[in-house]
Length: 253
Image 1 (tube, rainbow, N blue to C red):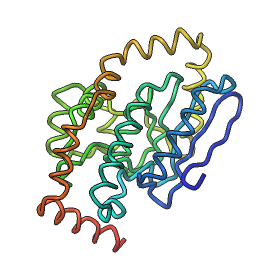
Image 2 (image 1 turned 135 degrees about the vertical axis):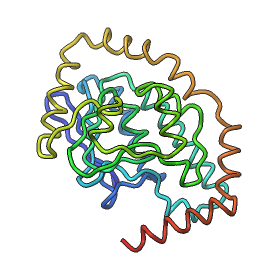
Image 3 (image 1 turned 60 degrees about the vertical axis):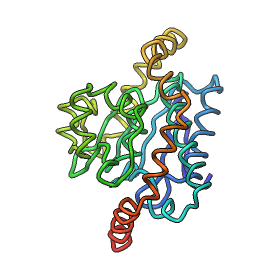
Image 4 (image 1 turned 90 degrees about the horizontal axis):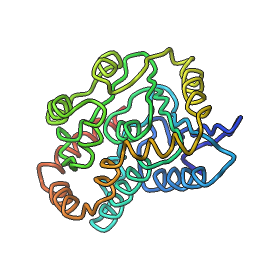
């Protein structure tokens, strides 16, 4: 595996995103992560998962530098994979906690939202969905995942402006559940997930899936029409210009 690292201790798997400094999401990372989660889902010797990164990032979201050079077929395939990955993560039957080790905008935030609990490291980090200012249309299914945790009104306001929250703001609106020092992040995540893992597994899992029934249905539905609109916007001159400016800024860092 080139983009993730996995360790298992006492029936708890820790998956660490490990793709460069900021863990940008590309086809390889999503494929490796989805395959690993599927394996864990079917492994009776693993009872829960912590998903984390390395400070100062959890994940910077979509790899815009790589995606910018995709052709139409490659881009369509990528977004189809991203939709499937998100749906599978939301429907993951075992406890999974996001230990958010730093910045988590856009796709990074989506990954965290799909988990059962979010613990974020304190510091000058940001989290939220900022796709609109980037020129990317947000599917209704992703909006519903956002609003599942923070409510329709807050999700609408923040999504349409691309608001990014600092940890304290994210905690206040319910986007995350705890803030801890970075050195205590995995300890806090382990303590929380062990409480889930102590409960009868089938009861816990079925209750989780029942709670998320509508959300799972929305994320698993055919999104071809939405994707078509997203792709048209992606190739529009205005969005390409915005992406080019963002990429130039990223490459200077």
